[in-house]
Length: 598
Figure (spheres, helix red, strand yellow):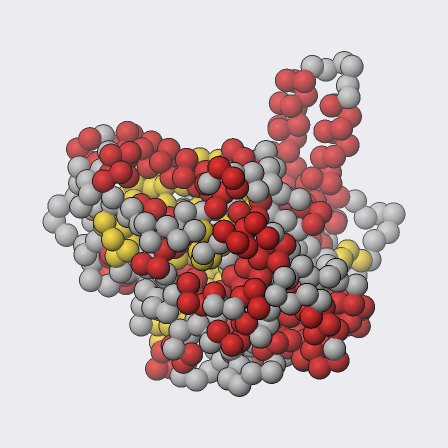
């Protein structure tokens, strides 16, 4: 590529959206901009105690326009005139109910303040009951429609969330024509889509979260869903059959969005995907190297040539889908439901006294109090890391289990809870923090073990994201626990850069995304190697982590029938009372138990 041309990558995270303007010739970042979701950051529409996390589409739309315009303004008119493509990644599964025109219901006046009409964020676990029913229901069918998603369906995913929303809200149920992932809706919005039936759905979201597979000729048949609950009858006909890889174009920028952004209608908009999948590309993933996007949660991506992986199926992961990361390769996804979120939870515990004492203080004014809390908040994790790193490692230090937001991989189970053990009067904040960090590293090792045990070898580790860049303490412990080196990618914005690489490919600037990776990749600038003096001790502590986790899970499993029997009646006009009865019958419980312990 002789001349400078430019592309835009848009990365929707849990708390904010970031856009980067990139030179497609060499990957140079020309400008970037971040927009914090205003409604989300006020805690609107969320009830953490009930695991309800919803985001208003206006947060997404406002952030899209603000960040792209900001990038273009920083870069100047000459650069803006040479923008050729835009691609988007988002969190997922983060779906929303839409009407026939593809408009999220929350953008209609009558649903503007209804959380059930908003995007159901990836970490929303209000569909735990529905996921349990899907797992039990799937045991009655041949073929196994869960075979390509690790054999267990999660409450974090598409169908569990859809079924929960339809049951919970009659108004949304009556108004919803279809159900759309965030990563599919933004390209549809940018290209001026007006008919959701014409929306190009990405294979990434469809295969990993929606049960789409070529073997099934698309989604599972209507009978699978209608026999689960008649509220789902006919819904597959309003979804999709065809899917697309992210190196393809969703269309071109509509006149409306071209005018709003100050770009040309010739700008190509790529098919969307999830953040970790595009992030793996931005982080220059290699076959059999586990690409770990580490933020609030982790998403662990691995790619393997299709001819090598063959018919191998890895159980208990978040799916394996041809082309979901790199077209022509199998994309395998795993992850942890809480990683940085675990550290953030502990920080909130420590901040609570200060926040509440200062809020009621008669000595210090509100502005000074707020500034003090912000300063202390920013320093807590770095200071804890320094202190925790000085604690001598022993076999009997405090232990923790990292399931504070349930467990994603291996073997999804969002009912599970975290734990801290081995506490004594000498257990201070650095010691507890150290145990929490170790638990997240042990949870990461469980994922590597699962791949290795089931015939997909992990040959290397790649660290991506904020935690990987900012915490040497955590990354060194990760290398020690894994007994493997971990390379850290130079870019702090691998998801957005990955989206830019796909934008360049969709726009025809490169014929394959691998070419874009090579030309636009920024490389690695850090590598952590195992401390051999600690490896054996961590191996012994890992065994204790496994034993404690097994005890907690056994207790949870033995309690699960009682949990299910205590579920409230399901409000389904087409199936009054039948769903509760079907959950309680012994066949469903046995099926659920078998699915959960595969």
